[in-house]
Image (cartoon, rainbow, N blue to C red; front, top):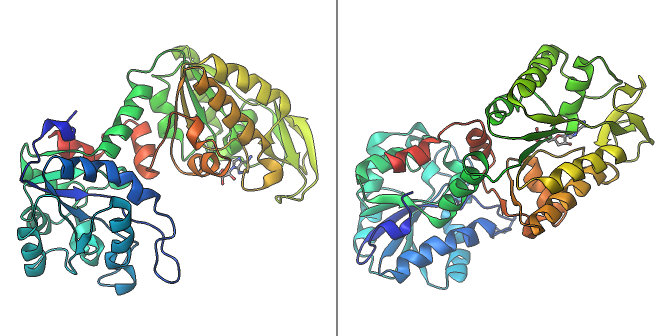
Length: 395
Ligand code: AMP
């Protein structure tokens, strides 16, 4: 892997793609600085090695120049977090950006204006990428959240640096975590897939059937499988056009020796709301007017048994409608089981969308091995794709 320690940064200018797409409050102050703090180790390593840093990022989805989305709003916060004054140039490329970059001294940090003020960024425009590359000696990609996009700053720019390019600490950690699950994971390996729909997870399921020993299927996806097997799912979310697909997944899993664990009971509701009446039913025997919104108690016991015997755990997607506190018990119980297994030495990776939100909301973040910083990038990695931003560094 091409990491920061494979290059010499002494007296070199490093162009770093960071993910500073942070939320701003009404006063245009940083409302959550998690992403800025996450980039700090990479910046510190380069400064300590005698280099200087040119930070580039997008913020929001501006259509052309939009001063409400200027990265100038976050400079003060970035300076505070890094503990060094950060210079800001109100251009991304151009004369002013060139001058600011040229006069940068070792130990100094410069931040460029929002990349997406230029439509060339998302278009992956080569001459825009070339102009960015002219600012520095080395290219570092530390933005996993955009690594699945072939944008100018995430992918195209890398071709102008030959061997002077590498991953930052954050991106390297993401790549290693995914490898630890999909390539070098200690057996037994478990994937837990929850969330709403089979259709949005099908490519992931197909990819991981070759890699895992156990697969827990939970959340809304459950009911497509249960119906395909002949059960009554009542009003539960169900993709009727995916019943054959569900059966073929079960068949493939059998052929590959993967144990599939579906819920055996559900907490159902008489309405899709937090205050609905609740009742536990067998998963294949849900009355017509009821819909399953969470895993039932026997399912949770079964899942805990699987989770605590596995050495490698991947978790994507909640077990129920965790946004309703009355239907969050299953997701919380699963989080506890994953945390316990991690405390006993298992490696656990939580990634992709809503499971990350759930893990953070219920306080499990410090109790699992790694929580991914990229939604779409994580999902595409689990689908088995090599992300363009990662490929560009390896090329
Ligand atoms: P995904 O983005 O595919 O991971 O789906 C996450 C969403 O699935 C969350 O918003 C959950 O509320 C939803 N979900 C989980 N279980 C169920 C269920 N039994 N019925 C309906 N939606 C569910």
